[in-house]
Amino acid sequence: MRTLTIFFTTLLSLCIAFTVHAVEPPESKVPPTSDKKITRANYLLGKYGDRLHFSSSQARSVVEDFEIDCRVKDGRYLPLMSLLLARVSEMQHEGAWMETIVQQRGDEVRVYDQIKRRDGTTFEPILALELNRWGELIPISIRSEAILNACFDGPYGRLWVPEASD
Image 1 (cartoon, one colour):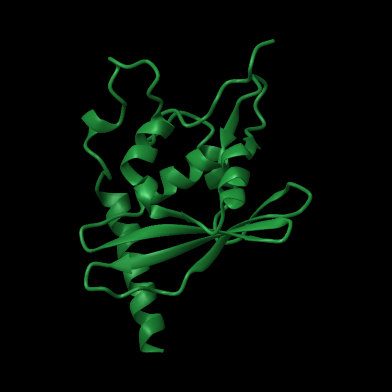
Image 2 (cartoon, one colour):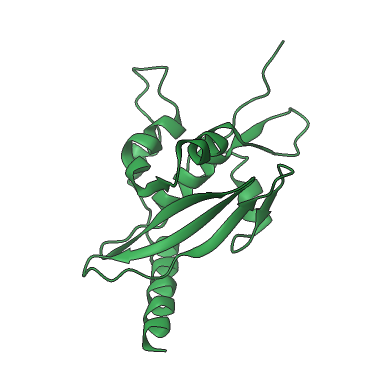
């Protein structure tokens, strides 16, 4: 019970801290413009990529290839990898941070969030998302609206990708 109380206290303090303070200074919100090939997702991958853990190369491939339909007329989509990187970048604080674990189980992929603290305390992973065998993304501990909000420019910069023109 004590561990559960500590977990929820830490999670609550992280949520409050992220609401009150910016995760990164405004000048670092946009990747350097000198290199046109650097996208916001590549920037986040370089900075937070070590906080994403994959159980297999196939699990990584599934996440890298999965595109979330933004349900917008212009056909934009949100790469699942970009969403995971944005979430990891958001959930950091001086004394605690979140890591994401992607596990493949047969035809399905499960995404877990795990809070770690500087003092070495590690909390049980919590199921955040599932990709079922039919290719459906099922949010478990994340609201669908929060996922779709990433389809628009916001505090993370542009994470979405425009529809490819033929």
